[in-house]
Amino acid sequence: MNSVEAGKIFREAWIEGVQKYHPGEPGSSAVAEWEDTPEWEKHSSAAVFGQIREFVLASDGNTAKLSRIQRGRFVALCWIAQIHRHFPAPAPGQIADWDDLPAWQQETDAEIFDLVEQEVLATL
Image (cartoon, helix red, strand yellow):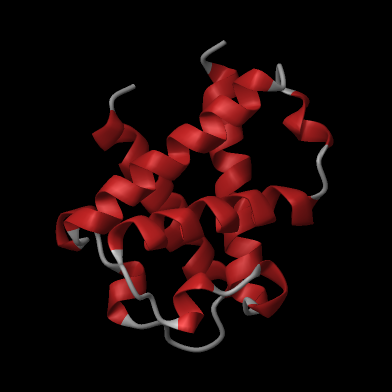
């Protein structure tokens, strides 16, 4: 799988989670299609997909034993690193720790991990 495909899978999982868990109407940028996603976000989506993939592979699939919170927290932490990579002075909300994220975002991050994990395990 190339990085564009990986990024698209990540982005689609994000959009599905936002649509499922976000209270009210999310902002248009939160659910923008791949073609309308900024380049930094496309690269970040592919990078975090890759980090999850490597984590699943390095654990020989035992990431399935992690709690939902642990799985979501991993995604959130990887994303924060990407924010720091692309923005020299990110806003505090962009780098909020797990406990400070809204519930909808925590749920979305956990589901992203699950989807990527399933994709990875299906290719083994």
